Length: 382
Image (tube, rainbow, N blue to C red; front, side, top):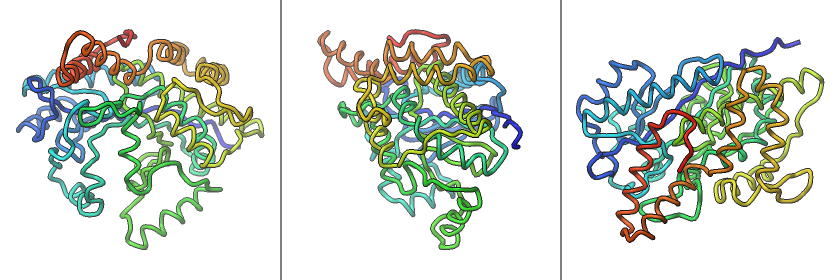
């Protein structure tokens, strides 16, 4: 019998770096900014492919509340230092009006290789996401839970959407980030594997063929981390409101423990085909929580609030185990007032109604994003 996993939690967030005066993305990171950040938070901050992107990561956390405290501190520290260089951070998966073609890559060997291999596809990657790591020590258990956990990924994406704009226009999608991300190879839903050794054989086939150097270049929506003994969820947009981020991480954590409890009782969640889950993935990308997702058991589109209530009921025992009842309950707050994508569209439309030009309205959206990124507490996303 496999002992219960540690179910530790770690969160990575990718932020956009903006110029406070123009509200546009910085094209070149100010000299000394990265060194100043690293001197304050060490390895918890890192550059990304483009100079306008910054990634942070929490340590290994025992509870969602611990991860929240770290993210609040990281956001505040990064913004404090960035402001000294005339910049600010934004937790949103796309910038409302920046031109992707104007962005400059970071001068590091890994990114030079990506640029050489992926060309225009990677140059368009002016996006940020949130990755949630859950500690599961047993290799085969990680693979088993991965194949079952894909079911909930669209539900988590729907709660996280923060990318309704692209290059100055509303896209009609609540997570346009996914449209950009899916241009890369080795993205989307993972294959279903029967064991860790089978997974490893497939990865080795790509490595031996010279396609990838290692498993870090497999960018599925959920994957066994190549660096840590974790199951990493990668589908969510980065959340502007920190409590939204912690809520989504907590739901994912509790869902995995619920699946483990089923396994312990010689049961399992039904494995649905990638074709079916991909349809819900698209609906979450397009509509967020607005138009419902497919309930495969009922064979019908069901309002999102009904599906959410069922999910929260299923993981209630696990939320209690982690002391995460409040974090889980916050999902209903997100549903009631909308995601960051909903709020950005409201801010934009209100500015237009008040007589602002489209460019002025978009700058207003950036101002809201800067403010909400630094908001501490379960503030309503206005």
